[in-house]
Image (cartoon, rainbow over all chains, first blue to last red; front, side):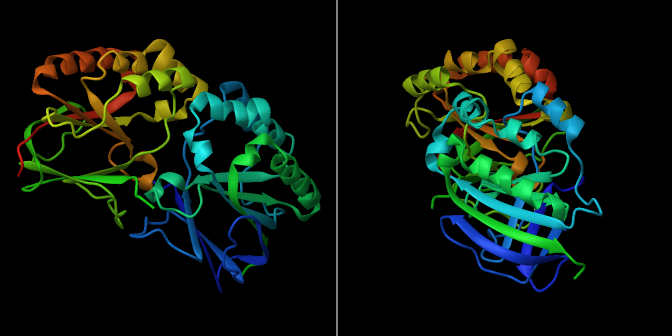
Length: 187
Length: 187
């Protein structure tokens, strides 16, 4: 069985060179020179702290069938040769978010914030993989890690997408967010 | 921070004596004399096999606000002195279930199968706690562990509830289910 667990280890190795680490809201994280992305990670005995983040790919929580079909039709995979820029965005949402029911979370996520619709308009330039952390151990520093890849000429569009998302009602529930920029240069 | 992670260890210790272990569908699990329920478990380096199951409490995935309010109004907590019977039901759902979108899963779960409505009609006699396993490591033997407690005189009602649920369209997606019966007798 293929593991769905990924780890993102800050250090001196890895194909991705860290160009900036910025705390958007809440506590910052430790800076590192490079990032090693490991697929099929093994769950650790403790939530890794500081320089290793981990998350697991899972079923989608909010999209409906019509949205999923649009995503599948437009999205491209990770690892495109021209996509030499990456951004890792760890996010933690507030207890108020997690106390909402499914219908309330969906309403904030899409009907009020148009999260999927905004994301769709930046496909296929921006490729993405979402990792969930909240249910790995109950004691993780973040709820989600989203990994984005795009070609350098699409960085402006990517920044515009982030600005749109960060202005939505959904982001009122984000209590910690870090923005880690990377370029692929071998390593 | 309180951990949401629980483990259920089959062995020779624990407050609960195992009275039966039955594979309802799919592969059986090892029999044990007693069950030790551990709150605030620490995530293991490997998915525990055989005699230890683990799961994590999380936000609800399907109930809407009106259903949640009915549940909160009627449900009782675990640990009632008279609730000396417990049942642990580990379940794994099929890949077809996890490939459904949120609206499709909700439709099967409630509009077609009335999962919450059936459960509500057995409150407050049956108390319950749901633990998620699927996103602990991506390599767990089950997707969910549900723990039920009730007084001996409600075992018939409990069995009737299980029969109702197992007859629903939702259960067509259950590919592995084990039914573990227990009584609390110190230990």
